Length: 223
Image 1: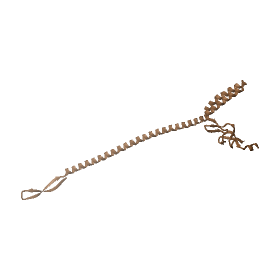
Image 2: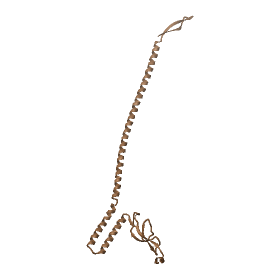
Image 3: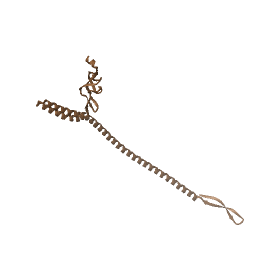
Image 4: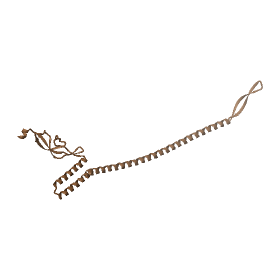
């Protein structure tokens, strides 16, 4: 592109005149276009880099999410396996507890029965001996020994007799089957025992059957 401009030119000493000068601006325009193109290329290059970076970030986030998902699936599988094992153990425990409870009920008297068996053996020997002997006193003595062994077994297993005669009547431990008028005893005293009562570790197994006193004066008893 050619541009025409007017510039003053001095000539001589007395004056000046105008001179027409032609200048070319094509070089300036080309330089400006080149600079603008480079700027546009830089802009496009920056945008491309940002897009690539965004894509890479998305890929990384997706990869991280997939890894987290796989980890969570693995943990869920492990937890489910632990749950199945715990459920199976609990079921086995319940079955074992039921079985042990049934065995405890079924064989709960095993120790007591084992202690009683020697007494049964002694009774059998005593009976065999009595059939071949006429010594009644020896037979009675043998029965007393066996009776003492039986009481010892009962005491070993927490069984004890209830003491009653001469005590105040206690309906929690005594069962009155008869009332006896007595001048020498106060009311509601145990006069006689008809059948022994027993406690098992301080719990009543069977009350003792007794007769109970009713106090009377000597004059009333005589009349």
